[in-house]
Image: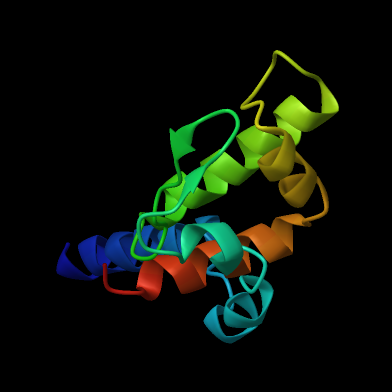
Length: 111
């Protein structure tokens, strides 16, 4: 009975690790250079439309993935996702691998 329970735990652990492929933090660090122009400047806000640019270092990994995919969606089909022109254009140029790598790197940084 213990052996069956142990096999069950191993199977669940294997499924959990394969369900979420972790991004490459080293590659992500290279990809975020364009992000730093806005998101890395303390107190930066955009002139038009006027809004505060959030810091993304230390943000939750899945949140970053979801946000970038929403910007992609909004760029390709306005009204269906996030619709910031600059972020939409940036996100549209990223592959799923790029997004995973960027998210892995940014989420690893302390706020």
